[in-house]
Image (cartoon, rainbow, N blue to C red; front, side):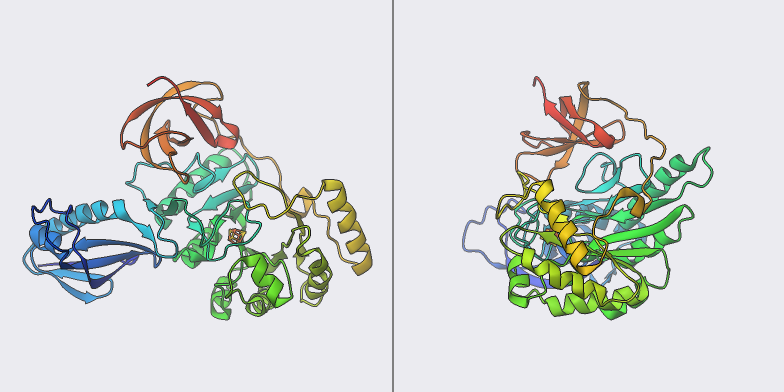
Length: 430
Ligand code: SF4
């Protein structure tokens, strides 16, 4: 008998229409309901294994609870092996439950390094702020989103195994600190989406806070998924700063900015207030010209009413090719003039600089290849956009636009970007 238990997975039996292609059945009659095991990874990502498949390879089974499955007819070791194979196959069809978008699970055995891509893993810009990105996906649809993220997104998503992220982050910290006297860094969780959709977020933050060379963990959030209980738990360790987005105080305008009807600005401002009593807080509204500039006065007054003088970092909306662009961006001159006047009227510091965050240069991470190099790499998964792939070489991942995906295919690439160990390569030859 075997018993398999998974913390990050939950199981549920369900009935769906049979997939005729799944077992190459010759029966082309009407779809019959088929029983399957629904598998949910980290609360938001779903796949399934049919009962037929499970019975074929592992015999009968029983769900003991939502995380535990028992196979009475097979030994533990064999069950672990066979079930992990079925699981790996089912993850080929992993989808995001918020959007239905195809999702890739990046884990220790996935063969996908964590350095090289701006959307997931680790981005180290040779400075004292290391960015980590465990997830893509968002529960809002902000009208100005620079990465067009949210419920309307049709991009592929990534979710990264927490242990893998921690392991690779530790390796990077060891590298930065080799022969250097305790370089302190900030680990910044800034994702293409809402980081609190990552079910392991609290554990991730807690484990990073305990790392010796980490002076602070900072996290960007829209605040909608936070609760007082989460904030209580997060604030137990002092090394934390929460960066909230807040674009309007007026409820209807706030909904319009967030792009969803159920956005509740009252909840978000309550969370900001509660958080600012416990941890460092930064509030980062984006001025979207023609929409919310008149809200900035209210936001400054709201921030002034909070305890412990949170940082207010008003940002200039910028037009991005792959973002949502409801208007034309202000020039930097217009923006800084607006900030100066606002700052003067309300007596609050609004112009921030690198020194406010103690950002400094740290040890340079070597690049295995450089701009213009032609390299051979292996396609491993699809990238976020259609017809774009991720290839792997030299323990880095490389985005390859305009490339049909064929798993394992070797391709020749000319590197068109290498800045900060983020790589993009163009296909050359065949
Ligand atoms: S919360 Fe952030 S990631 Fe989500 S839609 Fe808004 S701007 Fe984009």
